[in-house]
Every structure is written in C-alpha cells, then in structure tokens.
Image 1 (tube, helix red, strand yellow):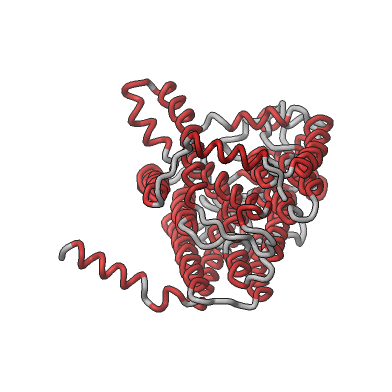
Image 2 (tube, rainbow, N blue to C red; image 1 turned 90 degrees about the vertical axis):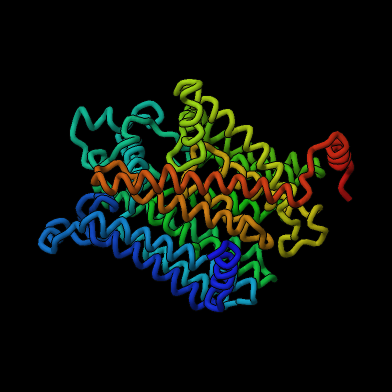
Length: 526
C-alpha cells in the first residue's frame, strides 16, 4: 500500500462525522477525568501520593491503607500507569473533537458547560494528587514558616533529618534539599494551608488543593466574561480552561499552584480597558506568586506602549505589590527563583541535544550550551509567532485589533508564553496553563493543536516521573516515552512553528520594520 493511499485513509478518518460532535467530546473528557479520579481514589500507590491518614471528614478522600490491603491494593503498576495513559489520551482526543465541534458551530449554553467543568475540577480536587510530589513541598515550605524557619534559607530535609515532624516526613525526592523558589504570595498560601490544616499533612494538602482549584475556576469565569458577546470565543474560553482535560490532569490532579499564579494576571487583563493602575496592581500581585508571570507584564506594557500616561500608571500599580512583597516581606524570594534556571527537564528538546553535544563538549559545557540555546530560541520563536498568530480583536474592542490594548496584551501574552514553554529546556505540562488562557480569547490558529500535541505528550511522559521505584520493564517503557517519543514531539513543535512562519512569508526584523515600529511608539495614540 503506497503512501498516498495511507494519507487519504488517515484524512478520511480524521474527518469522520464523530470527530466534530460535541457529545463525543464531552463523553471523552468525562471518561478521562473519571479514570483519573478512580485511580486516585484507590489510595497510595506508585502514581498516587501518600498524604497521610485522614484525621477528620475533610478530603482528599481515598480508600485507607488498611482497608486497601484487604482489597489487594495497591494495584500493579501495569494497571495503574496504563489507566492514566489511557485517561490522558481520551482527554486529548476529547479536547480535539470539542475544538472541531466549535469550528462547525457548537454553541452550548455557556453556564451549563462552565458548571460541568467546575464539577470535574472539584471532583478531581477531592481525591489525592497524582504523579507529582510538588504539593508536598508546598506543604513543607508552609510548615517551615509556621515553625519559625525561613523557607528561602533552609530546606525541609534539614529539619526532618534532625527530628520527627508529622508534615515534613511525607515529603519526597527530589526537592527535599531545596529551599523555596516561590514568591511571597505563594508562600503566604502555603503558610495559611498549614495554619488551617494543623499537624496533618492530609488536611494541609486539602487546603492547598483548594488554593489551586478555586483560582482555576476564577480564571475561567473571567475569561468567559472577557469573551462576552462572542459565543464561539466563550465556548473556547470554557473548553480551553476549566473543561480542558489536559489542564485538569496537569494542574488540578497534579496539585500544582499554576492557577494561583495565573489568576492575578487574568484579572489584570480584565481591567486593561478600564484602569491601567488596577491592571498594574494585579500584574504586580501575579509577580509575587511566580516570576514567570513577567511575560504577562511585558505583554501589558506592550499593549499600553503608545499611551505613556497609562503605561506609567501600569508601572506604578505593579510596583506597589512587588515592592511590598519582595521588599518588605520576602526580600530573599526574588533571588530564590534563580535556582530553577539551570535545569534541563526530561522529555524536553534539550536532553537529546545534550546527548549529541556531550562527546564534543563534555557534559557541563553541553548543558551550558543548551541553556544558552534555549534563550536564543525563545527570541527566535517569539518573533516567528508574532508574525503568524492572527490579529483578531478580543470581544468588546472599539478600535482595530492592532490598536486595542487588550487585544495587543492578550496576543502578546500568548506569543511570549507559548514561545517560552516550547523553547525552555526545563518545561513541564502544568506550565502550559499560562498559554492556554490567552489562546482561548483569540481566533483559532495552529497553536490550538500545537499546545494539544505538546500537552498530551508531556502528560503521558510524566505519569511515571515521580521519584519512586518502578519495575525494570516499566522503567524502560517510561524512558522511551520521555526521552524519545516526548522529546521528539517537542522538537516537532519547534519545527512546525518554523515551518508555519516560513510558509506565511518568513518576515524578518529589517531596519525598515524596526523604524516603523519606533515611529508607531512615538506617535501619540488618538
């Protein structure tokens, strides 16, 4: 059978009627989330965190260890891991089908779809987190604060190796010896979870899960409000955020604080057309959670670049929470984030390049070269995306898209965040939230499928990334999925962006282009 025949059969399969049916999409998304919840509810296992015994009625709910032993739990890794792989794949297909359904006219009642998404997320947050022990580290940093230690100077391991602690004892490798890298607002949430949860890791984890899922709900609600008046964009806003199975898996099931980081930035977008000063306050708050939100700050400044008065208001507003957070409450937090800049994650494009360069440069120089290459690629890919992402006004614009500050800020945030997550040598599936959100407000483009491919590949690859012992066969399969399949997808995403830019005219930043841009900045906005 020749290639042309195979290609035609594949095209027909991808265009089959079921691939654009909303009912199919919602069924697959529900099945995806349901599988994840079932695996988590079975209790501690190689993929489900051990958060300690429940001391009261609070979630997370799961089958207790003693009961589980009588039922033959935990199940074999060859049941649990493939179940999660299947759940992720079902979710990715459901997201793809839902996106196609929007293209052919699916316009559901937005409130009902939103409530479905809220229900899926809350249900996921009521069972233990899966596959990533980051939430245990959040709990540990809050515990250190509650005991009077500085989490930016001392690591959890330095405490629990000297004396027993009912919370710190549940932390896992590889970050036990690493002080906090989070901003002051994130540290505040970790401290508050410990105050509310007391000496029970189980209860502390519950509050941390709430501090993750509730901001995620707010993010989606604000996105729906920003898309008001455009039913298609509102549907995208729900499907790409609160009902996005890849984000439910990576952010909520994983127990990560990405939504707490993003919620302030999305609120900043909400106020772009209303008040530059309030916009600045919110983006400043975002920066006090994680410094990665600097890309949203750049985007907002770019949106106001031709209105110097509003640009100054933005800067003053942002400076207030940043000065208070980093200058008064946590001066060391600003420099702590730099600890995360020298890593290369498994499954990224970076490790294959390291393996190629090592015989010629040595391990240390090869890694240094990849880190520098990541910054170069960030600039290159950001430029390419800025040339090809379509200019479609965010609903409610009263001026052309290229003059509307909200459209400019949203599009620029998408360009910068998408460029960062696909070019960074250290990139994880939950990072994608900051790109999915602005993508939802804009018109359909190739980033829809690129984020889907990337997110699905990383999510599958990181099911077995937890620092626990898997069997040799599972280890071999996991290595292939992370270092070959997933890394190949990440490289493919970069190549696709380059091809997209090339076929769109491969515009370069010529001297004339720069001159025109400077004139537009200096020209007062009418």
